[in-house]
Length: 131
Image (tube, rainbow, N blue to C red):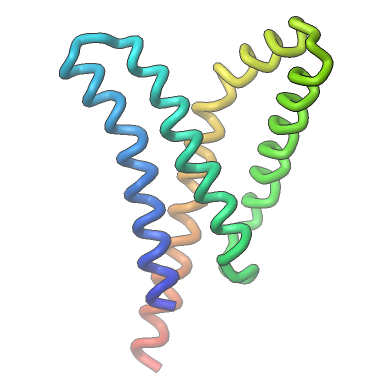
């Protein structure tokens, strides 16, 4: 259980770094177009984290909202696949506009239930120390 807690702490730390690093770089070089890199860095870290958690995290430790997040990811992947296969520009444009506005909310949503999962694991670890 302590290993799982350590994994969740590393997971949260990587999410924070993926969010803060592009902001720091943008401020340091005074080029705010770099902030679009935040979409890629946060998305990549959370997508990778989601896959790893899907495979390795015990079902009783997962937050109930994780399955809805995974359904949203599956929908985004399906729409992206559809946009690539059909070559209809309207599908791709709608998808990109939706992702532009939905991605920050999805990132916050994922971070929030990751915090909840980590707190639940921390409580279980503390309980085992006293038993």
